[in-house]
Each structure stands twice: as C-alpha cells, then as structure tokens.
Image 1 (cartoon, one colour):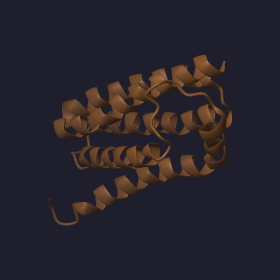
Image 2: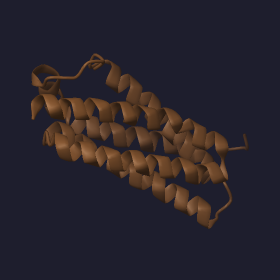
Image 3: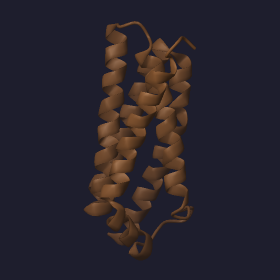
Length: 158
C-alpha cells in the first residue's frame, strides 16, 4: 500500500458505515416495533444478526469504493463511484420505506431496483478492479436474501 494509502480506505469505510449507522439510528424505534409485532417468514434470522451483517457489508463496501477511488481518474472511475453513491442512497431510503413507513410492497420493489443497481455497480467495478467487484458480492447476495425476507413480510402482513 502506498504511503497514506490507508486514508482513502478509512474515509470510505467510515462514510459507508455512517450512512448505515444513520439509517439504523433514524429507524431504531420502528425496528423495535418490527422486531416485536411483525410476522416474519421462515429463515428470518434473529434481530442481532442484522447489525453485525450490515457492519461487515458496509466495511466491504467502503474497501471496495476506496479501491476504485484510488484508480486513476477516468470516466469509468467516475461512473463506478456514481453508481456506488446511488446504490448507497437507495439502501438508505429502503430502511425508511420498510421500517418507518411499513410500505412492504413498495420497499420490495425498491429493493429489486437496489439489487439491480448493485449488480450494475459490480459490473462497473469489474472493469476497473476485480477485487473491488468481488468485495461487493456478499452485499448482492445479502440484498437478495433481504428481498426474500421483505417479500415474506409483505405477504404475511399485507
């Protein structure tokens, strides 16, 4: 790693974690209601799993984004970072749709778009830095699992 090469990694990880942490903080009371009063589909993990999983995923997102940021400026790098920020915004908004508004149908559709954005981001990262693309794969799979859970909650709770 180059001298001061850790600074972009720390910055991008902190940024991604802050977005996730803010979403969790702003939706905390709604999450408590969700955990106690909403019917959940089979395979729903205990509530403690979610903050652990998301912390790991946001860290991987940050490392991945830093790897792209460290590439020489180019249209591909700009496109990749733009996709990263757009999908992160979609991720942030999903929490409000699902937990605070309990708009389970809309949040499921929103999650489908998020999944497509993540896939597009991975393909864009692939062109610049394959390890950065691979680091996003757990996120893509987790969002697919989240879509299953979201669909199940929608079906069970109307």
